[in-house]
Image (cartoon, rainbow, N blue to C red; front, side, top):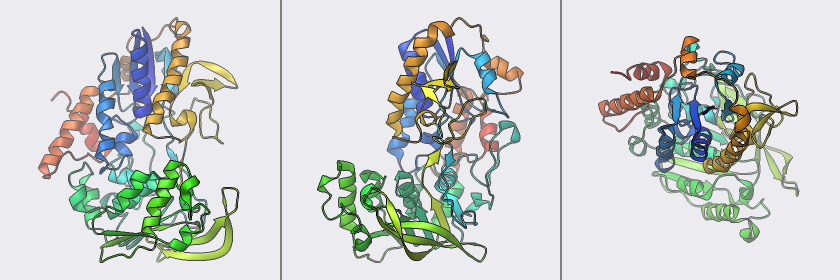
Length: 467
């Protein structure tokens, strides 16, 4: 048997495991994750009101319940966990599917003011990620500490916020904009943690600005996500006709690719639209580049933008004209980047691990038994389904190498070796115990399933697996 470790249990890791066991009956796979819960961004990155996408967990569950696949959660890989070199001793091959964990920064003055966050930090909060700011992890699990801690666990993201600015025009930006406008009625049936539900229900946000530095024809959101903003209860939506008209494709979008054309058509319908008496207003802004976050009373109070115009080459150029937009909350959603994993080579410019068809390259040469798939392989591009062909390419390389890899002696049961070294994996029974605890929590609150929001409660639930 060929024993393979897949590091990461999100879609990329699960598709890699699935492809391995489907294509070769002589392969066993351990799917390792730093968290005690599987599914990666499907659990911790998809907005709670997107239940259809979150149902992908059922597909990933089928993979992790395969007789030749084993889930081992709570297993950090790196300097404070299991070194990459040690994994290579325990398994014939290791496939890293660790995603792109860091947010890109704006690089402007005031970015670190209280009230300024990455969209991912906000998503982590309402998705009950145990690393969410204000919820530090036990040192034994090697979870990175949050960069700042003005304790948003109890609603600090939204406290005192009237106006919010979301910088970016991709699907994550749309998600956080929509969540800022959601009410308790729509969110209560979801698995959103109770503290986040309570904070959102009490939110005083009345204005939400979603801002892009380029035009509507270059926005990265999908039309389906965009249209959802226009269907929010008690929420108006408006786009500035003058800003939209700066886009050369706006008057006649017929030549645009279909996704961009549909986006422009939706925005045309909202251009200058009158707003009735609504509780919240979403303003879609374009051709504005953030240049500074301005402080008010020791925290962010406004965002200064420079007006941009198309440069004729697909980009924009500044005009020297500025506009300040009030904001007590700023969420940046301008992309992701991979982070180095100790023990693996890393291309800092691309934010990826150098590879050849998924085979890790060290100094330009293939490193036997080491592979990558997902965003750490190709960069933060594509949708969830893009991970399938990406994983298949890597698996094809691994199985082509299998005869040489299988000749090396490895541990009979890597999990036993991990335990001997002080790592106590959360196996599938532990994860099922977490699921039961979340169902019980929901029932106690008069809701459906409600996520456990912190390391302590997750690990306590997992330890009750035999109860």
